Image (tube, rainbow, N blue to C red; front, side, top):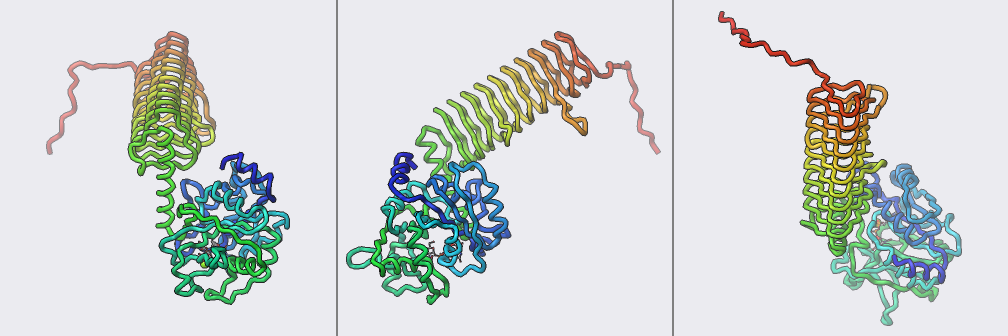
Length: 479
Ligand code: UD1
Ligand code: MG
């Protein structure tokens, strides 16, 4: 949301308190996991809604829980990284007697002076900007509904308007007449309503309807009966109000969401080989002239510098790739909490693995089947084939041979290996940490190095070669 617009709403109107309905069972997900905890773009559905509430600068958020209540509450309480702080409360709804009954459970937590925004935990993609418009439509003092033109309105509550065009009621599909069922403007499930009014109207609810439920939507009739205005803010973007009820719907929303992210990236200048084959599960920041080949997955916080190229089938999580670096196909980078940095102009992969705490300087080369963990490689260092660097500090221009490893773990503790600048480590070496290879030194192929070496020294630590001339191999005995 545009912060200026947000500020103008906040100044002019009552505090926003958000109620998120998340008590439903989600039977059609056919899963032991509560529906609202299923992930979209790598994040539980409910977390998307909590993030939206944070963007609205909510004062308080009340989550209505029921099915899997304890699990849902823990998942909310453990969520970190909100854009804003709010007071998070839970209200349990057991049994679930309808949406009106759900919101009734939140009332003890809601102060009379607030504007209550009602959201659903299974509707993840509502834009804060849209909710701002709904809030604006309340004028800080009456009810506003978010509605949608829906060519196939079956199943939804219909917006019934009078001859004057004013909203008269929401009629649920199962209670609607044939004439009402022809209405294509539907209630999205999202509304904003002053807390005082909400409390008064919810007290009047009954369940005399086709489903025997307490319908939140009945409060529209009560408002109209009192002569209170009910305003509708209509959008035509169904994705923003789409709910998830089944794995098919979850996958559809995921693809739609990813396609939107792909388009946003392309609008910023990022070249995507195929916008239908990228997944961003977090925040992907790209500088100019980034290109991304097919089937790449980005998780957590990823930054790609100017001119970075990402090959096909890469997974990049929590990392910063500096200008001009090239990540070749099938590379897996996961910085987890420590992060990974790849220096400008570095070449990584194909088939490389960079783990937490891997920090590569400028023009470092990491080749196929090389694993780097909690290690730094200074500018120009190279490990091109089949190698492991764990808990190592590698100096500038070091060449680390094929098949070499740092033995960093003694079974109880981790130790560091220091390879100073301009060292050449031959193939198939084992550097048993803690150990330092002095500047400019050379380690002969096949060496197992257990003691630190002097700068400039050649170190060879393997059995001396023995050759026996004219060696006769044993002959097979014939029986
Ligand atoms: C509701 C609206 C309908 C609207 C539709 C939009 C009512 C009566 N109807 O219908 O007008 O077009 O949403 O999707 O509100 N929930 C609870 N406790 C309950 C019942 C539901 O927490 O007792 C939660 C559900 O988990 C869900 C949300 O409330 O997150 C909406 O419930 P759902 O059953 O999907 O509403 P609909 O009947 O589809
Ligand atoms: Mg229902």
